[in-house]
Length: 428
Figure 1 (cartoon, rainbow, N blue to C red):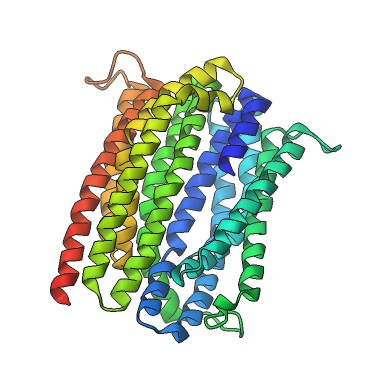
Figure 2: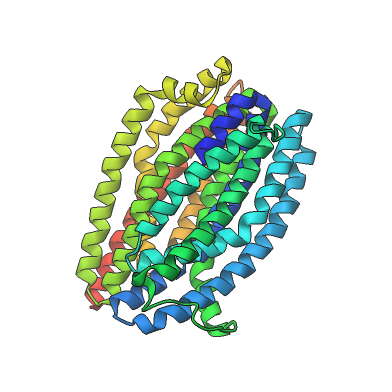
């Protein structure tokens, strides 16, 4: 869906693509942080499933929905306020307008998004992954259709340009939630653990546990995605072409990232179920199998990006200058595939052990201690820093810094996973 948004905005104009990419930078920081905050549902349900405590699952899910409504409502307010940052930036008027409107429209879908992610975690943790696949494919078709209608003004609708992408995204978020609820209500696999057979008020102790487990995950996700998102804002000073090229490279990287992320979520479920069943050896075995699979995926992704970087860039935009810059950035994306895949899978495996604080500290260090300072040094080349390059490297400098940050995160998470897995075996 994100690829469709960026590609269609890119074929509208470079300004539309730049505006959408800036809006997406805020949107992605928000939704990925929210994903982490509500991800506490995954290990809690998985542990109950592994321990054959299915009667405990509905209560956890109901409280997870309360948590989702709280954080989704607050995020909607915060995201609207964050759009004010575009008024402080030196942007072309059209770029600023598209960016602000994108943020405001997509914020309407945040409560639905958090509720959907809770149900997503519940469904995967009881081994039901087919609903999300089918619904995601349907949402992709819907997103493409709404984009085509609203971005270019087909079927008599006004041509909204990049803002049409925002409306398409918001519509699909609500579609995902309603479609998943409908599937769950009708599918026999959810009957035993169906959470909405009765009303339940917020339960403070359970909500406290969900927040205690979820807040470090949310901060972890924020540390990484904010580094990527802030780069788009910092690169904006170099013009629409640099912003658009960064958006294309980041968007395709995000697409390939979905494969190791999905492996990581599957791994979180399997590790949690193993630990719930009291089998720490199986949990460790599954963890390292997941890491091995992610490395295989990373190698394939890197080869595709390096070999077909020009074709990928051309598919996103008809602007020759933007496509050339994007193809260059895709080389850097290919270089960090191994580190990126390793860090996301190992962090998910660690969460299966209900360990969240150590990865949080590591991600904050890697991205805010290494990536962003180094990126500002190379990308902006402040003249008052002795070691800064003679000329700003713009987006390229920031992408070099991302490689460093991802490598630090991946190396540290491998060490943490090895230590946590060994400790659980010794305690068994």
